[in-house]
Image 1 (cartoon, one colour):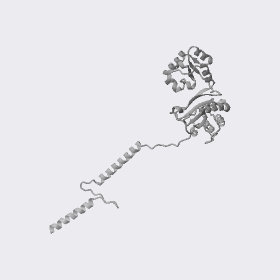
Image 2 (cartoon, helix red, strand yellow):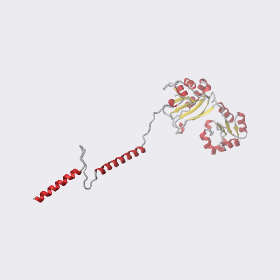
Image 3 (cartoon, rainbow, N blue to C red):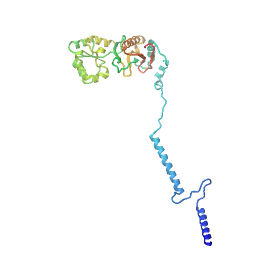
Image 4 (cartoon, rainbow, N blue to C red):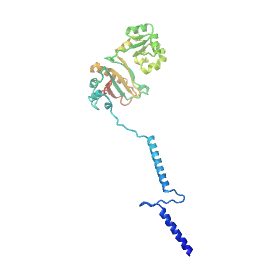
Length: 305
């Protein structure tokens, strides 16, 4: 009994020593006690700090991989343009559709350039250019002219070349024209050819086609009547064609023409386009028409449908 009592007293004393050696617990928290096979309080704290660092690093990596896009508010064309344009666009009433003559007068009035600006018509057609019968294309002679002198080259030989020179062609002949094409030296606005010599232009199709200079019977530039073709070209004959979006872009003169002469040209263009309406087309043919000048604001036309 004495030995059992002595052993019990020894165990109580050892428990008191262990309690005195343990760090004081923070109020409200249990004092960490190191146990066999477990990490100490210091090791646990270091592990938590390391894990927090890894999480911060991961968050930073994600932020770098997916940077926030800075979205700027979209500005209108008037807000992005210069002072002259901003002043000019104030004269055009938003959403209003103007009669043709009034629209042309306003376009001339709002021209912002120091040079003689070109007046352009932009006509949105309800056609599908991928359909052969809806690929609108044609020629029209502008009664008031184009405002510029057309430089004309004629691919012809013998008497036809001589007639072309007499009619006012700037370049005429076979060797003369082909020599320029070989050098890709194109300083003419219209190329006219006789039907017999069209085969010689085959290898220049990639050069002439994108520039709209390839002679075509529909545009009147492949003909045996060279003199008449030259006369029409100098008088103001222009070719129009829809682009991939179904829009016709065409110059109808210069600001210096004034509203009356521009009106004659614009009416001739609209008349020719109405006449070219495909028979297979259903729905609206002329969706909208705008007139504008070089670097000037556009004006919507109401009477062009």
